[in-house]
Length: 319
Image (cartoon, rainbow, N blue to C red; front, side):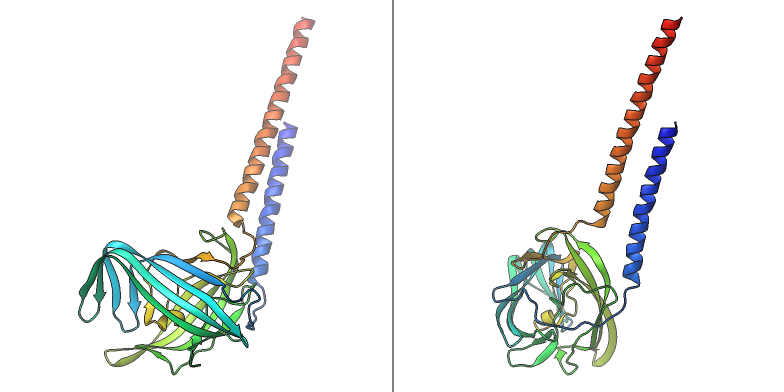
């Protein structure tokens, strides 16, 4: 009985130490110092590098308050960017957005009407520039458009703030962005269901202050969106892409996400080693402890049973 009690005491002590380690890690992350980020050209970026994102989508909301929708079917949204060249810290990208599906497609707006049935593909594509020292999106004629969000400097810690450039004179039809800032709200989240397996990420919550014109009146509003970036490279792994200038240049406000946010589904960028979620580590730890407990209990049980048999044999011989 003493051996069993000692084992349970050791088990409980190990469990407490493990929990203390988790709590200490969380406290260290919570109280990390706030800092602003400095942009620079990504080390991995070169001609031919690309990333593709995919999700289920119910509609495409346009910047003129109309939308594309689908009935009697489902659609898939695919966003794709590829680096065409880099010169003087300016990258030229090809950006493409595809929305496709099989069903009845309609245009919803002032006058709703069906625009086709069966399998259809809607495609938007452009070439743009990105100032790599400031993460600024630019048109080919050099006009400043707004912040570029598809990558950030890597390994940004919780509490880091990001102040992005906005062109307050630029209107995307009925929308105008006044302010675009972000904060890293987590630096240890694992993103699953992506190409190359689970990756550690840091999460940026973007706060977008914008105004829009409706019924000949200008109104102000604020919107928040989440982007998850690869810890080792800074490439966006998952993104909501709502009020993202990279889509708004196509006249698209948001993409009617169904289920998971758009996640990186194909890329030739080395995202680094896979990450195992802390929940899985905890499950493995508990499974090992349980196995050790069962094995130890079994050994103790059979040893005690063997001792009892020997004692019975000795009693029989003495009688």
